Length: 331
Ligand SMILES: Cc1cc2nc3c(=O)[nH]c(=O)nc-3n(C[C@H](O)[C@H](O)[C@H](O)COP(=O)(O)O)c2cc1C
Image (cartoon, rainbow, N blue to C red; front, side):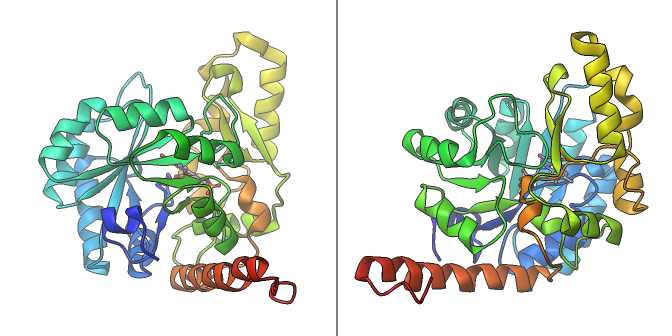
């Protein structure tokens, strides 16, 4: 498959692994890139810019294919050393950055001067157009289904993707709810140039997280995620667990007066305990509705090969067969 995304990022298949806190380490990014997709290291999971430089170097030892780094810009009282992280990316020779959260405009000149391509993650057409206007090279359009932060507009991908296609000139990938060949073909049909997956890539052999995390995703169905932190306008889709229920109870009891400090136990610093130690009730953690479509733990190579093989079957047998009237058996 050749799309504007495979051309832009010089990758074999139009499949991206989105940045994921405490999941997107060098092992996963390299495995995805080696399988012909685009692997992404999560910048802020590395505690300092020198740690990120080290992670980039580790990834480079594991793959000679292109990979990217995610930079998430969150509102914060003590912001991370963003200039330091940007420097580590540039000095590490990384040529692709996935930005997310706040508008990345401030960082674009430095990134572009250094030949870095920027794909910004957006949950609305409005933000996607803004990303295009400020000079981003591509957008990752993240629908309401997604694991993590779906924004506050709640537009699912069946609407969001065709709307993005109507408005955007730059290439975009479909993100949120993507799991398999059906997701990829549907995304292409709706005008996207590829797809981005988060939750699906956690349930792979190379994802360097505790087995309990992978098991929780396999056990979960599409009705097992919840939206938390909506009253704080920082909505996050997470897997339901004891901490999620406690947090939702606090939201109910405290109402609009709820403050971030009220939910520190459920959200602050919980990722290492969940992802590394496998303590599944330690706090809330991002997970997409797509968990309902995930039933195995393949290698990244097996997953991506399967997606590409089945996508071709869907296009050539099922879709072509529907046009020629021969598809009943192929379906
Ligand atoms: C455990 C987890 C952690 C995530 N952490 C981040 C992050 O730090 N920064 C970011 O931009 N997106 C993050 N995301 C969002 C993913 O990059 C991606 O956009 C999302 O998972 C897509 O939806 P899906 O899970 O339905 O595939 C995270 C998602 C998950 C599941």
